[in-house]
Length: 198
Image (cartoon, rainbow, N blue to C red; front, top):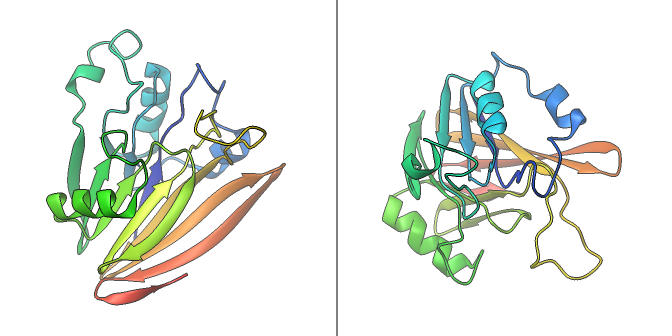
């Protein structure tokens, strides 16, 4: 079992003061093997915190990761990367580079360019997962529930993150969402070469 934490769009401290306490209580150092972050950390303290959770931190640059707030880091972050976890190639991209944002065809093109079995993307601040052409697409949403101007008036993002349990050809995705004061968890199974179960 390899646990992979997938999160992004934290926007701390500009749009959210911190990661929700209920999420921090669940993220225990030493249990997670990899952290995949879709970017928009914005602040160095967030980067330092993520480094405490796992030895392997994979991070791409979001559209708000600027050298002023991440000196010596922001300019070194790639736009995309691909890592191997078990039998899966996992592609990581923030998503602001793709138009329209969150579009299945644009994401499919990015997935094919990275030759990934799983594509992790962010930017929309909205959790989403689906299977398309034999690949799994995961957007962990915003871990802090940070404001996004693309949301309709009166609607706010639900804080969310994803834990993936990778075992052989199977990736079990657990989605954690903070609804009100309660953390709700959903499970999604994906087997390489077999249709996903939602």
